Amino acid sequence: MDDRQAEIALFRYSLVREAADPALSSRERGALVRALAERDHLGPGGERVRVSRPTLDRWIRAWRKGGFAALLPQPRGPEPRIAAELLALAFALKRELPRRTAAQVAAIIRESEGASPSERTLQRHFARAGLNRSPSGPPRAYGRFEAAAPNDLWTGDALHGPLLAGRRCYLFCLIDDHSRCLTGYRFGLAEDTLRLEAALRAGLAARGLPRMLYVDNGSPFASQQLARAAAVLAIRLVHSRAGEAASRGKIERLFGTVRGQFLVELEGRKLADLAELNRLFAAWVEGVYHQRAHSETGEAPLARFLAHGPPALPSPAELREAFLWAERRRVSKTATVELYGNRYEVDAALVGRQVELLFDPFELAELEVRYQGRPMGSALPQRIARHVHPKATPETETDPAPATGIDYLGLIEARHAEQLRRRISYAALPPAEAPPGNEDKEE
Image 1 (spheres, rainbow, N blue to C red):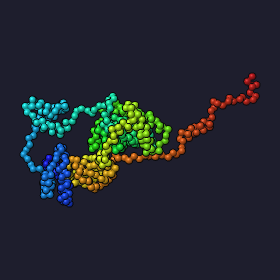
Image 2: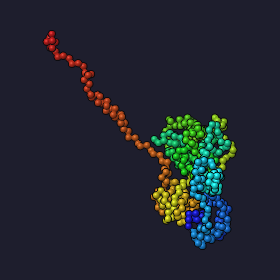
Image 3: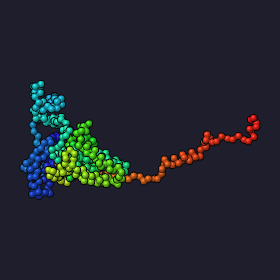
Image 4: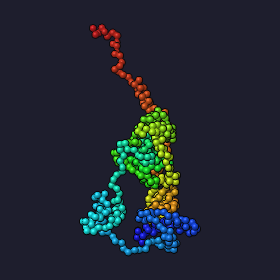
């Protein structure tokens, strides 16, 4: 059994796994099979495929009769293979000019070597080697560019805020390009992925889904967690190029407004905690910024955002799925996986396969297992040494240490003054008088 055959058999097994359960009734099994036959699936080669109901029934019967081995495809005759020299030449031509199509590469090889693999064969090899990516960078937005409608484009960035109990606060903020409405915002005590996700998740729940999210290359914005959330919600995630601050001009201007109208008013105010800071900022955003006409658009940001009607909001289930964290692990021979010191048992059919583990970063005892995008049940914990992801630090505020009341510099000053009072300055003493009776002897 080679890897290709095993991949196909595992694909078939993952489709019929639930429907083949002997505990199901005929009616329940029929409903599951019909649902599987009516939608597309991600095939073993990454392509979209649809499987008919008779084929699914045949796979179920085969699995019941012969187990996993019965799902292996029947061997076929040897497939023609591309010569290693021609494949290397095709890769070199593609890397030389990435804009060359497979058809152009095939034409060049035919012209130089006399024969060439087919265009489809070259496309398949280019895809496997990662050479089909577009060489063009993300779209650039400069000058007076403005999105055509609300939720076409959000821009996100972070602002260094005030000190709270000796710790720096950071404002994660997202602005709608068309309306200048603040779609998501939150102060946090760390500039990390968790705090960014908190602001973004609240914005998505309240303002809907943007078509594009434009962010910089800081570590919170370049995290795989943000990339996965955007992919699940079908949001195009674009990172700006280094040194192109002008492309994020609207949010940079917003931060100037935040500094001049909100942060300046905190200088003479003693904040109790982070919750108070977020309440004050929300009050300023919703009561002042969103209600006042913007200098560029001439309209209030919130009114301009809602001019096309209320946006469609994602469901809580969609948001939960998007903000699960994911890690890839290879299943060991004992049908177990390791994750941050924890061990879990998974389906035995996944032995040797690389699976995706999805979890809440604050609860590592519960894992969902997926293979090639298909659910494969939950992982059974065998050993739990850590319940929280190493990067999932809770937002706790540390109270300042109680004052001792000792003024060290004042004590030093008092001691120095006392020493000065006790010190005798001989230069400051008056001159000594001559003893009486000595005047006549000098004459």
